Length: 115
Image (cartoon, rainbow, N blue to C red; front, side, top):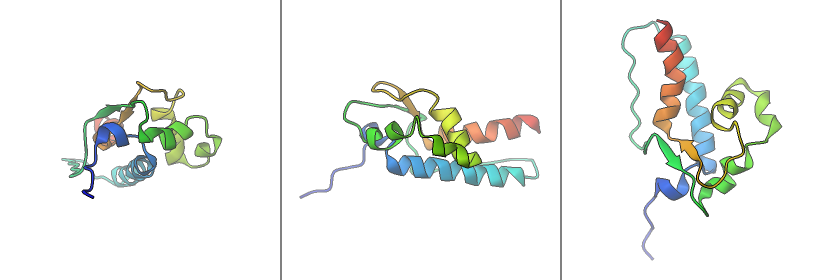
């Protein structure tokens, strides 16, 4: 049986995205806090589009779909920021979820604008 290709359209917001995006947010926050200024470049060889529409039957239901009202996300500053930026309302079919590139841009924007 041939392996099915990965499609961001159906996998966006899955459990892996949640872990990856919180880790990316935390890593960039730490790196940018020590950044001396000048040029900053970010490259992601596996990033998809900046946003993905959450479709019916998508893997998001087992990922971000379970987190929107999770109070434990407030216990860590990075998970709390992730919740505030990307889960401000219950996620429903047809909503948008960010890709890694947008997460990176959102973390970097305030630092870059302040310099």
